[in-house]
Length: 393
Image 1 (cartoon, rainbow, N blue to C red):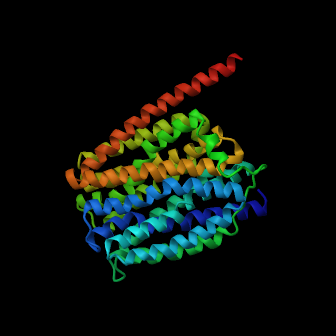
Image 2: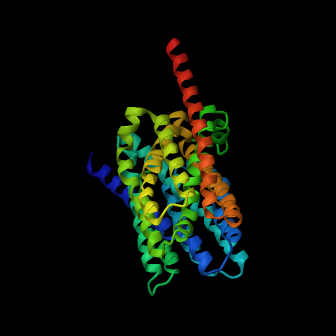
């Protein structure tokens, strides 16, 4: 690896560190802030937290098409990072209620570009230079985990809960500066703006995997909203919430490091199946109202589930779609997981929590995970049949 490649890798790692530090500063503690400071009820919190994912459903594919069409994803990433950080400060104006909803909507429009566009830049670059995506992405987990722990401590200090918005703003500014210098992989041919979506929607394996992502990845993202309230219900403080998130997110790092070798040994879909099974086990443990000690210990299951699912999912998408629509494919994939799946689980999770309590939310997540495992097995059968037909030719 030459000096230029090392520099690009370092910038990609730093971008993930700062951008996920920003997300970790805001998302996990926002629901607690809205409950304790803004004094909103469960349905109001669930609606605000689900607005973002709902907006992402529509805007993530749009950002992907714009990036593929313009060939300048790094510049778009820098712009959206700056705007996201700035708009996040609006959450401190928590009266009237519709203002909070408006902030959530506008923030989501620009935030929806950050993760899928940075993932597509990283995935295409690491593929070209034969580097390991997981070893770069783990810096995102590190940033997220450290941020939640630090914000939990600082929120209980003289800074108060509002510190989460200032840190969100500052770290995204740093990420935006780094984004200007990320490597851009230009497609060999420039697609028409809507053609990429049309191509993707007729790919059977791609569509089924989107459904798997919805059912397995969606609850994992929605858990970021309800996990703080769950830990609080088990007797945890702001600091306790930070510790739980820190353990959960940092546990992703070793699995992200080993994901590449695990995928080579077992295959993409078997790894996805194992990740989904780990999620199911975690949700069932939380449904059974465990002690706070068990909550802390079981939080490391997140490393097994997300640490393997994230790189396996992205690599599977790269494997089944043409290279000239890679960014569009990844943003559509992200729209289903980060957007539709996250919104569905967050919104209905809020309704379930208000009517039946926080523990029933995790039974709901477990039910979705079972459906995701069934679809993954179906996809494995399709892949096996496809391989058998190819071998017989």
